Figure: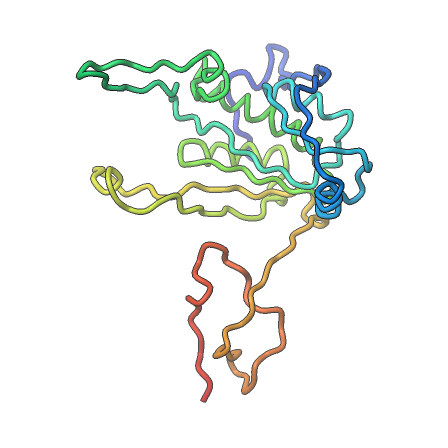
Length: 255
């Protein structure tokens, strides 16, 4: 398989640089109490196979430390991962504001810099190493039937797919999902270029022969007739295409 190489992927002895594996303890800052009815409903929906005392958790921290800390409890147990990582845009999220006719630059706070900045010390090489280490740990967390969805844009998606192929295997790539992100208007239409109007979500599984995918269906329109058939076909329906209008299907009328 073709391998994407970047500065920092291997050490001076030719060994791959592994992710940090310090399992720091979590500290509980706040606990939200639920009613017994709410808790049972959530457990019925999402808690299959979990300890009854298990709780949903919102974790604040750097993934460099959070992911290794999750491994002792959740390695091989996570069904689904969706990540929206930095897009390697180079943005530090400072912005210009006007106050009484004077311009000021709003610099990000220390917390904002840590949480949201998308700048990298060695540029693309730093970004790819960060992404590679993240995927290694996420794969270890996934259950054998688990799936991962990675949301990116044109800045990094093509590099990310090469890294995902390496970590998860080319055969475990399932789909590239095109996500329309807005309407064609304003500055987008004024750009001297093709209009960028979508992001992509890369869908991979841990084992292509053993993953879970629950497809949703919507009923057939009343006028739907299967091609070559004289009566309505008894099937589940049409795959749900989510954001599309439910009645926008092209159908063949009876008669």
